[in-house]
Every structure is written in C-alpha cells, then in structure tokens.
Image (cartoon, rainbow over all chains, first blue to last red):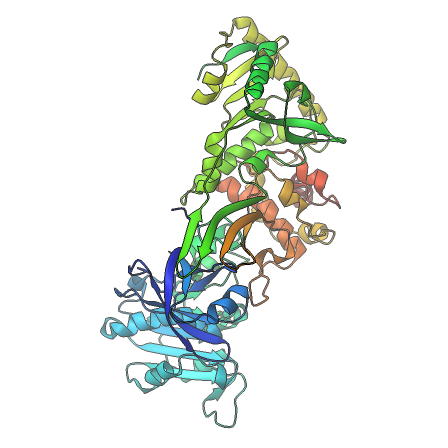
Length: 271
Length: 347
C-alpha cells in the first residue's frame, strides 16, 4: 500500500441529473464506509485514463455507498460517466479538510450554491438536515445558468416544501416555464432576512462567484470568520506532494478545500 | 560520526574495484561542453571540478518519468504498486546538490510518506566532494550557505593534497571505506581549515553578491509581493519550465496513465512538472488559477525563498545556478530577482 494506490470500488448506480451531470453511487469492494467529512474529496481513478479529484456529494453515513456528482468535462469525468453499474473504478481518500460540524451546531446557516457547487455543498446540507433540530434557521440559495442545468430536482422540491428550510433559486437565463428569480446568485440575498451575527454562511460555486457573494455578505454585516468556502483547484495527488493545488504557501488538498474566509483573505492567490 | 582521512589513490582504487564487481557508480562526466551524470566504468572519467551537471542528482531518486503502478483490468482490477530501489553510488556530488537532496528527503518523508522516493533513496549512497573553486559563473552557493553540506550525505570528501579529508555522514558511508580509513591528525585538520578559509575568500570574491541578508529573504518576498518586478521579468518568460526541470529542489509532478492496445494492462507514471508552465494550475473546465507569467515566476521564487524557507527554516534555493543558466531570457535567477527587489525596496 502506498499513498498513490487506489482502492477498488464498484459503481452501484448511475443517475443522469442533467445533460452533463450524473450522480454516481459508489461502494468500496472492501465494504467499508468511506468515513468522510462533508466537503472532503476523493481521487477517482478510471484505469487507463487517469485520476481526478471529485468532491463527495453525499452526507457522511455508516453505510458503505457514497455519492459523487460528476460533470462530463475532462478525460476522466467523460470516461467515468460512460461507465455502467457494476463497473469498477479506483478510489483514494477521503482527502483534505471538510466542514467541521461543530462550527455550525446551534447556529443559523446560509448555504449559497452556484452551479456544480451544489455537489459538495449537498454533503453538508444533508448532514445538517439529518439532525435538523441541532441547528438554527437554514437558508438555501441556489443558482444555475439555465433551468435545465439545475441539479437534484427532487431534493430542491423537498427543500422548497419544507417549513424548516428557506429556499430560493435563480437562473441567469430563464425559459417560458420559469417562475422563480432571474439574475446572478447575489440577487437572491434580498429575499432573506438573516442575522449576520448568528449565521454561518457557506459558499460553494465557480471561482468568479466567490468575490461577488463575499462582498455582498460583508456589506450585509457578515464577519469574515462566519464565511466558509470550498475551493476548486487541480488536486492531482491529494497528499500534498505534487504542487498543483498550491495557493501561496498552502496546499488545498491538505488545508482545504474547505476554508474559513478569515484565513483565506490573507492569501492573494485564493479568490 | 567520526571524520577520517583516506589516501586519494586508495579511495579511487577501492571504487574502481567496486565498479569491477558490478556496482553501479554514477558521477559527473564531461559531455560536449557540459557536465552530466553518467554511470562510469572508471574513476578516471570523473569530472571533479567541472560546472554543475545539467540535470541535478534528483533524477536518480525522483526520475523524470517514474512508473508508480501497473494494473490489469478484467472483470476484476488488479493493481500492483511499483516501489523499487537499486543500489547506486552517486560520487562527486557538489555540496549544493547534497543540500538539495536533503531538502527533497524532507518533503517526500513529510506526513504522507512517498515510498517511491524513499525506497530509491534507501539504496543510494551519496559521496560528495567539496568545491574549492566556483563551478560556474551562474552559481552562488556561498551566498546561500551551501558550500558545505549539512546532512544527506554518506561521505563528504575534501581534497587536502594526497589525501581526502572525509566527513562520515552515515554507517553506510563508514563501512564503505572502513578498510582504508585512517585517523585524522592535527595537521590534516589544519590543512582542511586553511583550504576552507581560502575557499571562502575566493567564493566571496568571485560569486555574485546577494544584497539582502539570507535570513531576510522571506520578509523581502512577503513585502514585495505586488512589486512590478514580477511582471517585468514575467513579460520575458517563455513559460518553458526549464528552470523547474534543472532545479535540484523542484519536485512537482504530473501523473499519467498508459493503456496497452489490448485495453487490459496499463501503467500509471509520474513526470516532472513545472509551476512556470501555463497549464500547471489548469483544471478540466479550462480555468487557469495562476495565469500570469509574472505570477508564476513569483510563485516559484516564493516557494524557494519564502514558503518552503519559512516552513523548513532553510532556503530551497541552494545557489547552484542551474536555473539562471538554463533560462532562455535570463529572467528567472532568484538572486537577480531578489537583488532587484531589494534595490527598489530600499529606495
């Protein structure tokens, strides 16, 4: 066993969520639970093609299967999404630092997800919803480019209907059936009345989104240390060696991908 | 471990005997007008006082291409990890390169042990030799406190006339020369001290000056993060990555899979990668997280003399001068950059 050797896992189920995203349910052949923290990632191997870092989309569980929400975008993800149930892949990890629930217990939580950012955020959202009474108010703001690109539509419906969750959704460009907000994700902030002093804000989305959402949250009075983000980088090795994911002096695969903004704001390469 | 002296002839004969027995001995040799590491057939081939080798000795511990594992994909997938080392004596290694290797030893052994590196390292014997004249106009090892090795060698030789003064760095080194080692005499030690005093003066005179104090480099780089120097130098960078390839302490790597045509058997290998290359931080979506050439140049320099310097309390630039020599447009040399930052900062 070395740090680079993948464990063999089986794809149990593949569900196509959109034209480009699929949800894969995966289980290690050892039958062991992955033992991850929400927000952590795994290195997924498609043998003969390569390895790619992918965030874990399911909440931690004692059960063996876990879920990855994968967008077809590169070699590995294309190969991965064309697999069939029963096919074998390799898994290393979980790696990195995820969301530590102790920072969120008893607090109000504002989730801000942009596009595929919902994939990692979903692991935290369901961790919170599974023991809902341990937390204060829960707000979920979700944005996508177009209605057909929205992920996890059944779950979005559930969040919309729940009385213990305040959910708002937006798209950049609507269609004739679209009845919700149209505009960038920050246009959802005026819909909610959150208390910045009591709320932990968690933002995951494309690189460009962070700057704008963080600026708005700060304008609304959210202190830096109550802002959490998860950053995308090229985590090639996952174990702090290969150098690709470095932001100034830190390795995203070791110190992140989840960061508190208080720390991140001093890293000029971060956002 | 105790220092000793060996007669030069006896040591070279001993190594030649080992070569005769089939031992792999690698040393710098002359190749065209440059120096390169090569497996030698006789110690007569060794280039003792040549320029720094084009490629540093890291290539023997962390090869440019290294197979990490092979696999077979059938109904089941079998993965066989390749963690291998073979005995090699690296002979005539300059102090800067011993120090560079010692830094790689640290990073590959940190937290997550990189067994691929460590297994190779276990089998390698490093016999260094002290440079008594500057090896090239580009080097500035004296400015980086790298004219002597701190650790990471098995034996370290200094030419004191008919003998080598030998610093013994490991049991492996000690046993290698046990049959020919003699106790040092006060006269040997005196000779060594004199040689080093002369060497220090010569290097101080001939090597380019580092204007800031060595220990102030992290501070200099921190306070000049937004200096225009980065983009001025970066504007002339070809993003060729030569500086990364030839650096004894650059250890970033990429990983690739190869599948045989039968699509049943494949391998996964790692390759040297470089933070000056445009695609180094590129993710599948096309986003490049360190896009500017100046920003990439800054990252490399900061790694050497700020980030890793602070973390390991030692500069990750040993002053070997390879990057300055390899750079096509002469913009990458950390000493040049640091001096320029310092000059403008002080104004």
